[in-house]
Length: 216
Image (cartoon, rainbow, N blue to C red):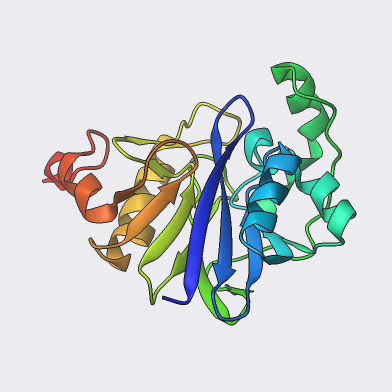
């Protein structure tokens, strides 16, 4: 399979920052660089990759805290999330102070993403699915050929994203999962924002929040 991935847990929240790369070209994107930039760059170097962009699922600190510094250091464009998460990005300094993180710079993505957009990683293409609920501008990246999704904090193995943050909404999140993710297929493997991988099929059977049996 030409698209490869490797997750690097970063920040005290152990957020899954994921390297995506095209095996043919060795060109790569980093998804959700929340912090620990040296750790991320070591993983890039170890695999002989050339970083060409940053992709973001949503605007929470543990997912985007390293974005401004990494973008500036390597002159990388930033794509995502959806514009509805701009208020989270604008509040990054406050978020950092609140959680005791080092100071974090605000940034403006080079490209906001919408439902139906695509993003490229080397010669590979991923679909963008807008999945609000955890945050209003959350997006998911899906590589159809390898049936791989990067879902940020929408869905976890055995759980779902929190909805008690500003502009979070539980019903919207459940709708995003059922209408945007499940149709992609039970066999889809996903990398969540925290914790181990799972498949959509496994979560439809066993996840206490979104298992099919909950909805009749």
